Length: 361
Image 1 (cartoon, rainbow, N blue to C red):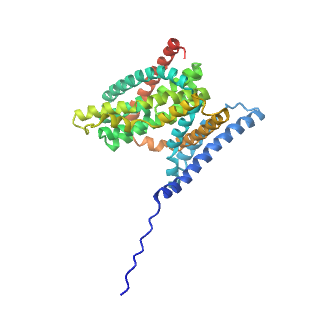
Image 2 (cartoon, one colour):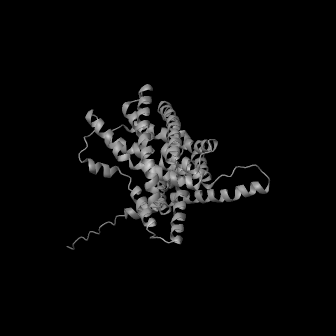
Image 3 (cartoon, rainbow, N blue to C red):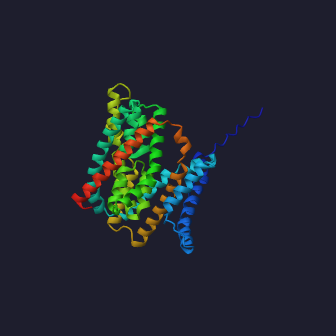
């Protein structure tokens, strides 16, 4: 009797499949971003040629607006969603590459001031959001998530904190929806407020980095004002991001002491796990640029790659902004977030104005 030959089934290569799955969405991000560039170049020229009064809208806002229109009309089909979700990767890649435009001395100089401002902002925002949560009688862990999201770095901080304090999925979805909605509003309100108060590029960039929650929205809000403001917004926001591990650790220890979360074992390992690694990449590229590892043409190439990465990011910001989904989450978390964000924006603007007078940045 002949032996039976068993032919092993060939399993699909998972990394290759995942790569193929994101291609349609990445192409969509690129198409929307490039359309934003074309609209910036052509709409203003067309309006001027026909003597129309039309504001000069930069590609950042065009890309976001196009994404919002698609998301809130036809929606984002399933085939594109995996690729659209990569906008956070492009954001981090853009920030790392942006390090080539910062000398280490500038980072240390402004970083010291921003670190002080960030510390004050985090303490003040957490205290005020906790107070508001109690006034509106929100669940304690929902209040914690809103406080961390507003004080540190938006959705990333909420996701990191949710696991550390064993929060409910419902609480995290409520807080994420509120933070996303308010981040979308910041894109349109912050540049207007900056122009009303005649803020300089540096003051506005520091303010946007301090007050806008999500890194993507902070980057976009800065870039909408000016290129210089966008650079500073990224630097200050990265400083806030670097604090996430310490804040999440503090809340994890607190909720564990209440018997409502797992105790933290190795605190150093916990901090490293939560630390945003792209901040280290940004500093590494900045060190290389400081010691002239790149020539002038290479710095220009890295800067252009950073802009393209941000272009995909801004398209993703628009595509993930769906107002129908946000309305489903209820009004109380949004009300707490909205009141808190207004107060934090005013508070941080006062901090920036005061720091500008003291440190002259």
